Length: 463
Ligand code: BES
Ligand code: MN
Ligand code: MN
Image 1 (cartoon, rainbow, N blue to C red):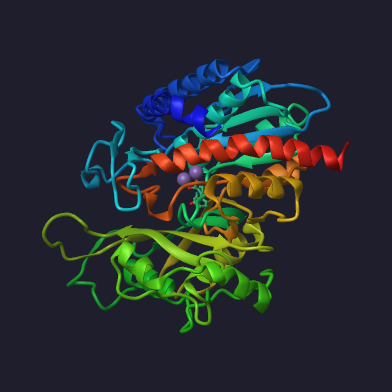
Image 2: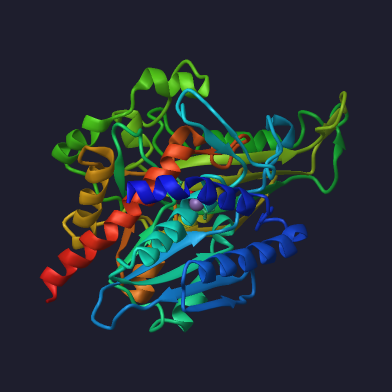
């Protein structure tokens, strides 16, 4: 397999570079046609690798691309999920090269080069590994599982229309395992299989004061200033131990045993390199937990944006009529994102002082997910990683969210295996996003090796 990949690597990389040139920004309606073009590109790519059925499904949002290769009714079936949409690239001025003109550069962590482009790692580069792994297995006449691809265009905006798609196509999407590469590993020397994702609850709040912007000399000191009030309210959302100060917030949290925590922290975060990599001199978070705990198994609350009043050049003395903030909460098992959104709304309204009105809206959300580690799929993945990386991968719970994963389990009844190959330092969602060439090639190899192990183990289970 390694040899096959070496022979094809230039071709595979060039194909990925083509895909990365299309700006499939799902959040921005101006890019609707580009998103569509990307769906067409994926459709053609699925045809090229030997899918027998390929179809673009229109939704009320961006299209879903579906493809399948059915080798035999008795063979196990793998459903591959990925997303072809990307985050907006701004702020553009912080990119060293344009986000949709991919280039390959070497970095300290990627001595064999990395592809710099929006979507390189999240998720075009990672999704594309699956197409190439299947292409190799087909060419090699060694594909022994059925494969179904669901590649969507709305992951970065909450997968709003995918639930309907999977509900409407339940029987078409039946599988023994769902396979996703949209998470990460710590390093090539110490790879991991992701076993957990956090949930998410994304809110927006508005604090409304006087009926118009006021002169801050004539009125300052006499009325509730919405920005001052919003800052007070936000500050009160954490207590002195940096726990989220919303009553009931932790009620559904399943505490992890000391033993499990200890095991998890054997592959902990090196605090010095963590701090250095993001240019800070101290970490901050919930008291009593490590940095790894804080970003994987503990729920959090963060302000993502805050605005209001005068933000133009120079100074303007004004008390604004409104202040706004976007606030997200990362959730862990068994917190229910809808319950948490309601809890947040009630709490935020309750703490508003007299003199202001508060509006709260929920944007989107999704559940957390923990994958089993005793499954056939996990064991097959472990074997594949071991062959490629030379070590047994450790299990790692990630801090990010892929809301469709718990939804797949609810609607389709299938478990997911998260085989991601990105590094945290690959700058997903940030300027200069990149994806290592080694990560890409080793990912293809690991995925290709997963299939024979999975089929063999699955046949032992269900001969
Ligand atoms: N691929 C990421 C999620 C991710 C990244 C999980 C790294 C684990 C490790 C995904 O594309 C993403 O960005 N998800 C969003 C949620 C979505 C609803 C916008 C997130 O986590 O913020
Ligand atoms: Mn992603
Ligand atoms: Mn993302």
